[in-house]
Length: 314
Length: 303
Ligand code: SF4
Image 1 (cartoon, rainbow over the protein chains, first blue to last red):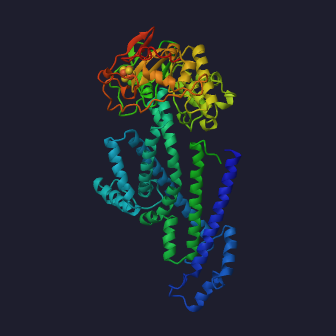
Image 2: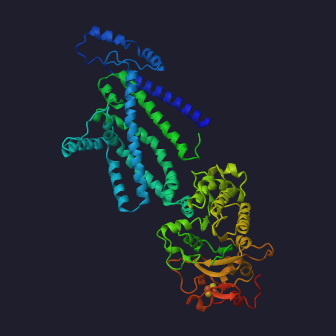
Image 3: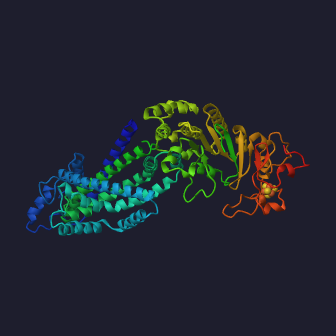
């Protein structure tokens, strides 16, 4: 890694921090303009207890003061306390959930990239064969199915379907924590983007195969495997890597729904729960971490870029 | 038709089938193109009969090729040195280590300065001329019997063109590799090749030793080509001749001599029967009913 790359990473990290700060500030201010608070629904509390609660969280102060207090906390890495579950600190909670979401997102990306790229290559090399048609047809379906539909189908298939077919030996145990619980949600999350990657890889391969340097590679008498993988694929990957950034973002945001469906204790589930509970402190924390996660994932993708294309240097 | 160590020029307008001929030699014609008639013989074997593996061994090892546009002919994501080495390793003629060691001398041979550093560069760090040199180094790295250069200088500056041609000439002399130069540029042919083939609409219309063809072209097409080159010794009043019209559509060729719609010397027979390629002088052959020696009989000699 060159010095330039390190400087670039430093700059990007600084930008991510800044983005996270801005995002959380906007959400903080937005949320505090909303009517009502987390305690309104708790009927058992009387007015005095409510006032005590508000005071405990500093919610009785004017909001600019609250903002400054909150910001001081954030700058020390403290996102505050859950409004619903007293005593629960948000930073470690959200950190843990972010790790869960990142794991799910990582495997979804692995699935997406492997499936999309390998099928894309094969379809391009075997253009206009049955294989190409079938793969392209499936891609159109994958492309047009939202992840919650895919997820529902997969749940049906792997839970009831597998249970019935194997007499109850193999079936999906919906939940989180065991390695075997990763694939189904990861596939649900990754199927749509893999269709996008498939189409892009195929198109880009088809274009590259016609390039002069691929003809040169043939003219040199290289083996077809080397021509396809070393000469065509590496060049075909360049536009595919470009789209990995936006795809990563969509996988991360897509995990909100998937986590909820599969009951995965990640950021996405917390996001929905905290909104339903009006636990604004957590809402802000979740938003902040989403911003960080998206930023980091995109940074990672951008770092892959120069590895594939030597013309790009940071 | 190419002899060992020879330099042959194939000349013609664009779109007349020169490049396709060259690509056919390596069987690199893109789909759906096919060789419908004629054969390509290499050392007494028909290239069309090669198996996949034989073909692979033949490409880049027996015959190698350099292309028109050096800017796009090298892979942008691989180091230049590696691309040269790869050509050598592919044919098992050299093991990995020897191939590695040969890269720098090869670059030196094609006169790339600082070859050791340059081998580590990527193509985008090379100029056009240097890329073409690298292509030549790659083409010659396996010491092939034949190097086909398809318009190797067209995309380059004039000064670089001359250097590349000179390089090809020297390498032909030093390494004994036969060179087939495909071009539309007669000046380039004159400076490199001992023998010329002139093609029109996919057919050979004239062939012979370069000097002879330049001094007494027999086919009207060759003659017109030569007339269309500006000459330093011509007086100002001489107009450059251009050949009116375009090469024929090969999917719907005209009857008789393919050149007759554009030929200023045509006779009745020309539009009915296609002339055969016939001997017209020592080692010279032309495909024409009339021939320039008759067409210009009585008139002033062309040059
Ligand atoms: S055969 Fe006739 S038309 Fe053809 S080149 Fe000769 S003179 Fe011209």
